[in-house]
Amino acid sequence: MSVDVLKLEISMPNAHFRIIHSSEPQKTYPVPPYSTVIGFLANVLGDKEQIEVMLEGDLVLGILSQHDYITREYTWLRNLLPSAHTNRYGSSNNRTWQEVSEHIGGQSPVSIEVLNDVHLVLYIYHSDYALLKMLQQNITAPESWYSHLHLGRAEDWVIVNSASMVSLIVSNNPADLRNSNQYFQWMPEPASAFGIGSYINEKHYGELYQKIQGPATLVTSKYELIRVPYQGKEGGIIRNFRHVPTRLFCSSIPFLSDFTLPAVFADSELNVPIYMANIARNNCSGRGG
Image 1 (cartoon, rainbow, N blue to C red):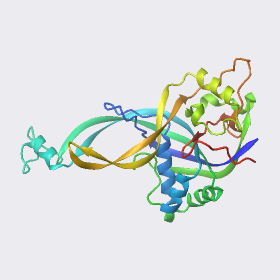
Image 2: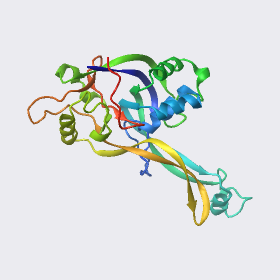
Image 3: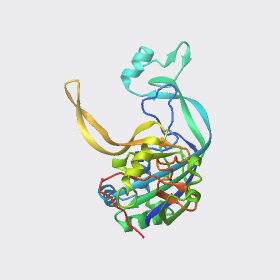
Image 4: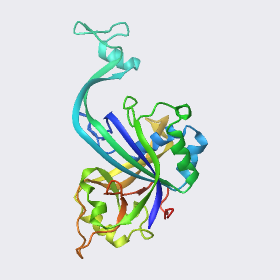
């Protein structure tokens, strides 16, 4: 059995995928969240109608990530609200703090963890096969993009090395899974995993999910814009994200209780298992080949 997906191989000199509850330093995940990849794909499509097609159809994502090393950047966060300026300097006409001229508004020093020499492989399945072909075509058509290609921060530029339609096989052959510990990836819980029951044995996948050692993480995916009140006022509009329960995975695949390896999706070129998450819907069965 196999399923047809769009495979994008990407390089990035630097990347920061912020762990939102971290502050000093601002820590990074080793893998981009699904929401970050969705934003990247929307940028590639560059068309509101096609983005709606992508988000309303059966969208499924798998992500592999490698990096060579981590550094820490030291920078300033700025706040340009007039109240922040007067709180900092005491007057709207003053920009001096302790006899040193500073940036307007409030500012705070912060350190940021940064991944360096990053290599990503994205696997995209969608119920609309034409959408995948459009993504493949647009990836080399910058006139179609909303902006330059980046993942996460605007300064973290993306270099697309290849974009091809491939078939992910279902295998428990050790040769097809031998590089499992070479990449970080999100492993979705059974209820959010693609192909359970139709391609992958539900019991075996559930046992595998319980056996792996990665930390449990709620990974952001799609969002909706909602209006929220603030201190009795009308408030403003925020992004209300959905989350996919996952484990962060980067290790060899453990044996099941019957001393066999579980059959999972695999990239036979990289010899890596690929864990695919349902993003838009929970009833995906896949386009087999």
